[in-house]
Structures are given as C-alpha cells and as structure tokens.
Length: 347
Image (cartoon, rainbow, N blue to C red; front, top):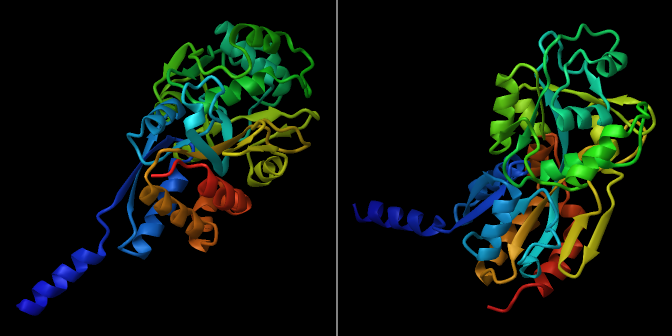
C-alpha cells in the first residue's frame, strides 16, 4: 500500500500544474492547438496550453493588460494601438484567406470573381449572382437570379483588414474597371476593420456558419475554416489575367513573395497581399504576441515550446495538414537572439 501511495505521489509530482492561456486569432488557433497538444503530451512536466479562439483586437488588449500569458493575431500591431510599445510580436505561421460563397447550383472550384466585383457587392449590397459582370467571367455557369448577401465581421479581425487591402490595391488583372475598388477605398480606407456587410458575423466560426446557412452569401474566412466547414471557395483573377484558386501550389507560390520588416522587438509582413503570376494573392500571416512585462518563467516556457516546434517533424506535419506553413525556424535567430534576449523587462 505504501508503495502505491509513493508511486501516485511521484506521478503527481512529475505532472506539470502549469497552464498557459492564450487568446489567439481564429486563423492560427488550429495549428497552435495541435502543436501545443503534441508538445505537452510528449512530457508530462511541460505546461498545458489553453488556446482560445478570439479576434485579433481582443487578443491584443488582453495581452497588453497582462491578463493572459501570450496572444496571437493575424494583423501586425497597429501604430495607433495605445500599448504598442509594450508588446513584442513575431510571425509563427502563414495561411491563406479565401473568399467563400453559397450559390445554389455552383460547386467548389467553379466560380471566379474579380476584386472590383467583390468590392461592388460589398459597397452596393444590391448585386445578384447573375449580374452580367459575373456572367462574363463565368460563361460556362448557369448562375441563379439570387441576391448576393455580403457578410462582414462585427469584431476587429485581421481577415477584414486583409480583404480591404486586397480590394483597394491598384492592379486590375482581367477586370480593368476599378470603379468600385476606388469607391470602396474612399469609404472604408485600405485596412479597415469595421463591419461593412449586409450581415455581420461575430467571429470567424459564425462567419462560416452564416455562409453555409444563407443562400446567396458571400464572405471571407481562412482556408482551415473553409475546409472544415466544407465551404465553396471562389477563384480570383490575379494581376496577370490568370484565374487562380487556393490550391497548395498557388498558396506556396504566394508565400514565397511575402516581404517582411524587422525592428528591435517586432517582425511583421509588409503586406499579406502578393502579386505573382499563378500565386494565390490573399495570404494571412499569424503572429505571436507577448507583453514585455510577462514573467520570466512564462516567457522561458514559451521559448522552450518554440525551440521544440522549429525542429519537430510532428509539428511540421500538423501545420502542413492544415494547409499552413510554420515560420518559427525561418525567424528563429531573430526570435531567440534578439527578441527573447533583449526585449523583455527584467522581472
């Protein structure tokens, strides 16, 4: 009996009671959750991770306030964010954002839209799926006489900012009419995070549900959410006149074109919108963020976790299966030798 009690005490002692809480943008949640589960299960002394899906705005606010251990966003910390100087950020992953719709009679991989048509749908909120502009791009499809219901986000979301940037960029592709893109930019700017749909979802999951439940819906989600929800993805016209779909090869071609900027305590993409022939143009970098005042014990645990991830084949497989690419290894010298060494307050 004494031996059994001693064994139970030993098991309890080696199990970690530590738990790290992280509200993160929905884009990166699946991969980060998969990584952390593998990591914790390999060694019971490692901390458990409570990865909570949220909007980027909520994650930034909670991280800055110190009420969570770290956060994750799919937008760089904005210059006008009150506590920007108190947060470090660096890229963990990159994924694709997709345009999804619910059009009766049309299957995934068939429908193509231009950026100006998408801008027109969101701006006017009066288009139908059999509009002549859409028919001209899709002459082989029998499109229904059905209103387009553009869906936005009611929360602060990086995907909204990315869509705005894409819709207001200057290249034309096959569609040389830029009327609605210009009008959209005049009204919302190039990185808006305000609700601009005829319907507005409370978060990414709600957006996917609304697309699936609403005939005629048009919306935007990350590729993981689209795949898991079995949504119909729409192709786009790139800047070179090609009709491209969010395939693995097209996404990979786009990832290679992302440009990054570094400062003393921050690494971020100049833009997630890329221009390359045959490349998917809507990419969605995902960042880890930490308060500069986070406890030494916490940031040590996070650094250990990232050090494991960059060399783990299991972690690479998990993110690859989700259609996401890890960036930890690529940026590890900056993360470990600059940010974790120099950017945190002594505590």
